[in-house]
Length: 105
Image (cartoon, helix red, strand yellow):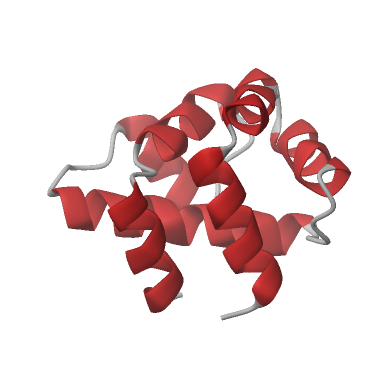
């Protein structure tokens, strides 16, 4: 796995201040800026793809179904309700999910 992906997933899993900044993002562009400001070199397509993969993986592992907003995100419509989606992603970031997602991605 790419070191920046591993680093980002680990940071999301343990850094509550970072999580808060992501949750406050009003758009995917703002969320990406938070990630970039933390020193992670992601482009928008790469960032969206990673978040989609992690969301799907966390839902599969927990046996939960995707909400309508999450389904729209996975289908490529991540331009709305960014903070709701980020909150959903972060809430699924248990240590098990992080390590399992890192192994799977």
